[in-house]
Image (tube, rainbow, N blue to C red; front, side, top):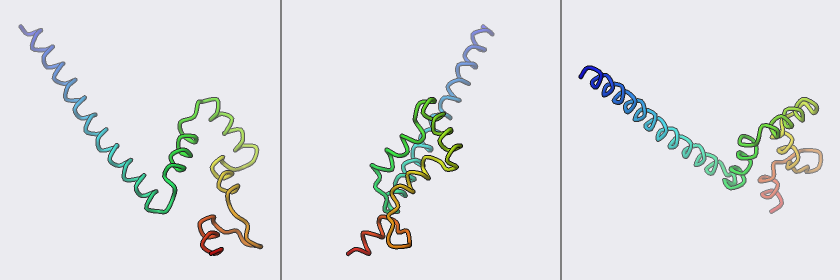
Length: 105
């Protein structure tokens, strides 16, 4: 009888931890959605941002290791290099792509 009660208590504690983790997961999911909305509200192309995020943070370890070597050799992160490569040069000053479009109009 006592053994059954102990097992029931153990099972209940598992259920409580799972419930707590599910609540944390729902909150994290909501927070992540809010961040993507903030990216969109800031004027970024969300589809491109999601692809950049996927490439930067969900790559295989080999690719991450290669990126670390790249950063070590060049002194900048792959993200910094990508941003630098899309920066539009306008005369002597650098202009962000969105502003270059506005200035050209």
